[in-house]
Image (tube, rainbow, N blue to C red; front, side):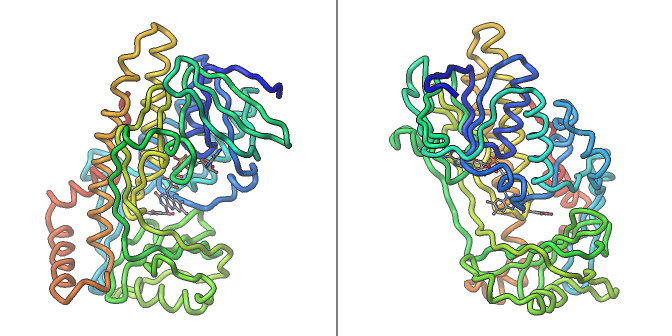
Length: 396
Ligand code: FAD
Ligand code: DHB
């Protein structure tokens, strides 16, 4: 790299948002440079989400990275809600005219997008340090960073902040220009991957007196499971035996169903947060994905929202480069926020319906069960859940 470079769109972060944006821009013939502070291995091995909405699946196909997803992704037409010892199936496809979700790990999505990026030959730099953004209110904002001890500066037309919740781009916006909305939750999720064939074809979201548990999967050989825990839970306090005992308690239903058990090969704790920044733009800096908003994972929306944002952003930038018109750039934030707030409400609702909090009392527990009982007995309520869970088509 030379110390002074130029590109059309400078992208900070090579998570799902940054990589998908780079691929979309490539297909529009727009130049970009993607900068990522972590190593390629770290990014590809980071275990996170697993539920893709139809919109995300369609987008992967549209940008030419859907081949392995079509082969290895697991299409699910429904989910189960379990409480009071019974599993209730919600037939999402039947309720929504055929919409479904696909199970495919976020790390596989990232893997496929990195391969596609490398094929294009366009720049993607891992292991960069001290990334900073400058002159955001000018026509030529820039990004500075260090790679292998050498300082570089890239002049851009536009910068995309796809650097997640802890990134530097949102923090570069003057505080007076932003409104922040935030809520933290008094619990987190302990997630594991286990070498065990999934014992159900579909996900099971369970509310038990001891708290929430979720049965999911990654492949016909690998089960993914989550347990509600303290937000600052020390994972070393959870032996494999303790994890399985708790999962059995919270997930096993009266019909004899329970998760298959096997060696646990990954464990981690995730905090839970709802967060939105408004607007998702400052002059020539556009925020997308977790840089702009965080949802608690219960609705499985985080990754899908990130994809919806960059689809909208790429379309706006394509219009700008094609015609010079900035209309779609100007409405990017407002329209992305509409989808964001819809997902915020859904994720908060799923989370509060399915988790137990120390501040809840017996009334709250009965109210939660009453809500679940209504949900699984009302076609209208199930349709509402199914519509939000499977997600609406992405629009530009
Ligand atoms: P990210 O995936 O966070 O990508 C941002 C990228 O920017 C990262 O690669 C980061 O290393 C890089 N970066 C950060 N700072 C800089 C910098 N200064 N310079 C250059 N690069 C930088 N969602 C679900 O739906 N279900 C789940 O189970 C789930 N589990 C999660 C577990 C964890 C621990 C976390 C953090 C999130 C989880 N999510 C989950 C949310 C989902 O994974 C995110 O919504 C999704 O990753 C958003 O993609 P993104 O590209 O916007 O951000
Ligand atoms: C998974 C993650 C989620 O947040 C969720 O709601 C469902 C499944 C998963 O990692 O498989």
